[in-house]
Amino acid sequence: MHHNLLLVLSLLFVVFMLVMLGQKFKISSPIFLVLAGLFISFVPSIPNIEIDPELIFLIFLPPLLYEAAWYTSWNDFWKWKRPIALLAFGLVICTSVIVAYASKAMIPGFTLALGFLLGGIISPPDAVAASSVLKGIKVPKRVTTILEGESLINDASSLIVFRFALAALVTGQFSMEQAVSDFFIVTVMGIVVGLIIAHIAYVIHRFLPTTPSIDAALTLLTPYFMYIIAEHFHFSGVMAVVSGGLFLSYRSHEILTHGSTRLQTIGVWNTLVFVLNGLVFILIGLELPTIIGGLEGYAILDAIKYALVISIITIVIRVLWVYPNAFVPRWLFKSIRTNEPNPGWKNPLIISWAGMRGVISLASALSIPLYLNNGQPFPHRNLILFITFVVILVTLVFQGLTLPLIVKWLKVEEIDHAASEEEQEAGIKLRIMNAALQQLNQKYASEIENNELLNFLKHEIESDISITHQRLNSMECQVCQRKEIEQYNAVLRELYATQRRELYAIRKEFAFSDEEIRKQELQLDFDEAKITWNGHS
Image 1 (cartoon, one colour):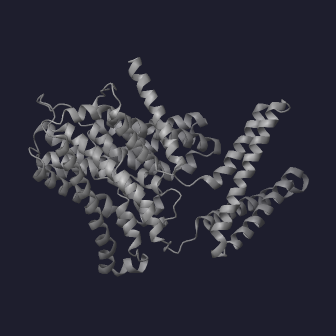
Image 2 (cartoon, rainbow, N blue to C red):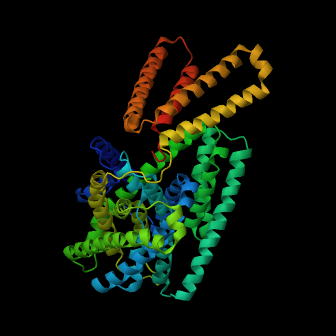
């Protein structure tokens, strides 16, 4: 046990080093993770660590799905619900069906049920992979919103397909009519369970005297409660986590009211998700030698051929699906032409090429049980795991490395005619500062005259309003806007670094308490977060 734990910790350390190397060379971390998993499988004398497949979903799925739901904007999600639904439900089902029949026709001994199982595993693209690849590249907000919304819902839809295919294989019984009925029951009731637990968590966060540490811990427990309770009643734990996460994300401004709470919670979740992603790829790396050695009569070259063909099929299906669904509804419905800007040919190309598979597919494959209900070994389990890993490898490395080049070549521009992120930030800041100034003038007018600190606060807010107005007006210069804002942010980062160095010097003088110094450090964290925060990072 101690030896295996040390091995996993050592491999995690190697993964972290590789991710940092990827950041240095500006290569997406999921690409390095899948390559790390492949590298681990070639290390000689690496022991095979076995983990109960049922624990894979329980350990990995709740936090990964909850984190994806938490960072999904409900307003943006609802605005683009039609293309998201067409991708998350239509494309997942289409991919599952085509992969099922193609694998049955191509792979000897492969049944249609096994094909649907494989299709359910590899059908959902990974938003984390796409956003990581596109990080630092200017793409329209519409594209990122559709990709993130699709990934959130298609995880749920694909896992439900996976669940029914797995149940049919394990029990040996399947009825399409019963499956459709069960699909709606487990989905709807899963949503109900998720919302009930989300409301309980909301009440605890909102009305009980929690601390930042308790709030962060509660956010870790909540998705597990949602998943386990829903699964206990044989409902969809995936839909419970997704629906509950969306609700609490929408109410996050009410439950995480203090900046320190929010910063601590974000830090905990970023670390947890990063470690879980690394662990999944370590697990597949440790199991790959066993998987390859147990391909059940299939030659390794044949298995690679099957995996490459299925990888090409998944890529082609997505391209062929995205373009008709981007334009056919516009041709059929005038309301869509009126309310939505024309996507052009560039945006659909980015969306279709961003269909990289990732950690959810890997976790699903690893969760396949070792045995059927009758005690027989699960058929073709190792082949399914191998194909899944190759599909992830091909889509992440091939599409992941070429996607940034395609985006830069397209020189795509924002077409939604919405205010830029900087303009929206300035507009929001003006609103909240004006609200604060109005509160001061209405409620504390007499106190301001007699209290020098309150008077200073009023002038400080008025000064901030004036500066923000000037900044907003300067953004009218569209040609120089981006360059000037980047320079402004770079100077701010440099100033914050200088202030941190000065705080370090102050700490060595022992003239001020550590508590007050930490308060100033926290304030710097808040100030820097204003220019570095971009949703998921």
